[in-house]
Image (tube, rainbow over all chains, first blue to last red):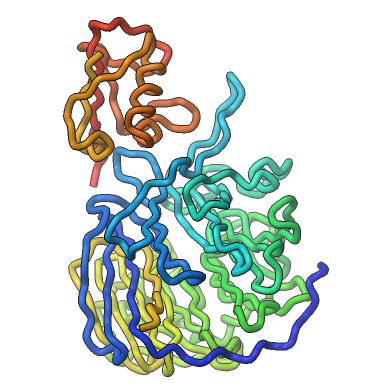
Length: 391
Length: 86
């Protein structure tokens, strides 16, 4: 490990402009817009009606370009790009696709493009995409043409790291949580369900597992080198040596350069547990994190424990957690919130947003102290991303 | 030859239900179709040259499963969206 620890960067000023929520759903994409007050929200869409939109991202480097992943029940996966905030779209000339296999060999096929990550600030045309099954792709022309990151997809241990189809999530194994170290464009992390967390120090030419200390209680060896199920991995831009992970087996934190995960979910209430999918970081405080627990008991219902939805916050890097449920249903609220479906804006106080698989979007403009529903009757929500429009 | 396009793919060819493409095999016809309407092929044929799971292709009244099937200029290619659930 060559990345040196670094003092935390001074936090940027809080955002004060308008906010848009970019919503990816099972049947298209929607945008929820508000003004600076964040009180009233207006929904527009659907865009790509009938398409499964797993991710929709505004490029933070120009705050103008949108990238969207889409497939339909019939049609193969693709990526679309808009430079006018969704008024018009252009399909990638070469969408993410695995290499053609030699004659007689079984080749991999991208089922859907699951995750998008803008590249480093110094590489304004670079994007990364994660797919199902696990593939890592890179574009160097703003998302128009994509190529596999061959150091990963052709790694001699790829098959061992990623496992088989039975090792994936119910709708297929996935590569997600593509993280770029803001200090170094060559330093990358990925998460795979299944596979675990992996790190590259050379822009993807080589990779190594980064799972020490993390449980995988669905395997004979509960602490294997790889084969874990990270649901969501986050790196704090102000303290890039701090990683957080909401895993299938709990909530974890890693302080680099040490390469060991420490379970910080053990201080969650026992009857709630520390299972969930999303994980959201405070934009200006690396010790503040939100999670949205799901029921991971018995047959893994993956709904809010006891039908009582709540977010939980820690303000001390996981030493203690507080429940945040004001405004949410007090009972019979069987929310499922997927790994990309919770996000934060950059205002003060921070706005939090999450979408549910039953098509609701909830917002808090006071860091989770109270919630209100700002959209309902949407399709099954896959992803919610907050975009600062800056005006 | 005549190629019939199902509704999910018509955005690629100006919303037309029927277009022309040329080739001596289904693979060549689909390549020609993609030259005329960029991107259309990958939405129905995957990177291993297999017809996607919920797409069906017929030549005249016969379903074809492989792209190497020879075609004549008088043949008609029908592309259908199969059932794909909710």
